[in-house]
Every structure is written in structure tokens, then in C-alpha cells.
Length: 144
Image (cartoon, rainbow, N blue to C red):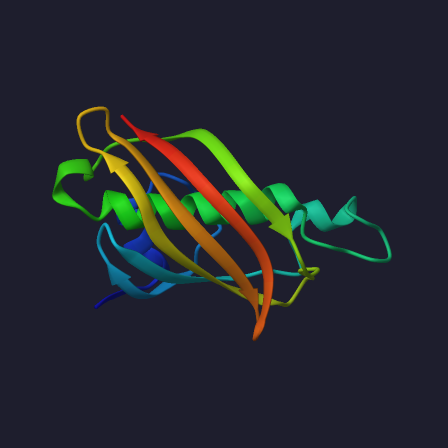
């Protein structure tokens, strides 16, 4: 299993601050499964408006972190290395627990399908906040 720190993550996926939402990869089996983490920094600008006095990570950030984990899962393969991962769809999204500033989320993704001819990939990602499942999402990307 492969492991990556934030600098190594940035060598694989194109996102950068303020939208880079993966800090490390704890386990990676390229094209099959990934376990990644993101520390929800309390100083993120989004918390100034979502919601003042009761900050919560917006669901779209949770979905984006799942998409970035999916990107890492597939861009770590030679056939997709250096390509651009584009959102094609999100399915079966469920938000189960709040994610707050200072939390560290763990994203566990696995291959659902891959069409190598069209370079379309799909994964199922479970997002954990501590030991509790916080969200579920199926992510589809076109790798260009």
C-alpha cells in the first residue's frame, strides 16, 4: 500500500489551496481503493458565512473531498497520470453527521466501475468523522 503526504498529493492531483481538500493518503491501492484524510481548518474562509456562530463544513466541500480522493485513486495509475479529472456526476449522496472546524475526516473510496475506452471512472466514497460515518457519495469522473 502506498502513502502520501500533502506535497506528494499535489504532485498527483491539480487542486491547490483554497480548494485542496486532501492532506494525506494513508493507504492507496491504485485503481482499487484509497483511504485519505482532510483536516478541516478552523481558519477556512467558508466558515465566516456557513454558519456564523455555528460553523459547519458545507456539503459541497464534503462531495469535493470525495471527488479529490477519487482523483487520487485513478490519477495514481500510469494510464491517467498527469490528466485532468472532471466531474461527470454524483449519485447516492447522503449526509449523516455534521463536520465542524477542527475535525479530521477520513475518506475511504473504492472502485465501482471504469470504462478505460472512454476514461470514465466511478467510485464509492464513505466519509468518516472520527469513528462515525458522516457522508456517502458515488463520484463519476471523466479523466482528460
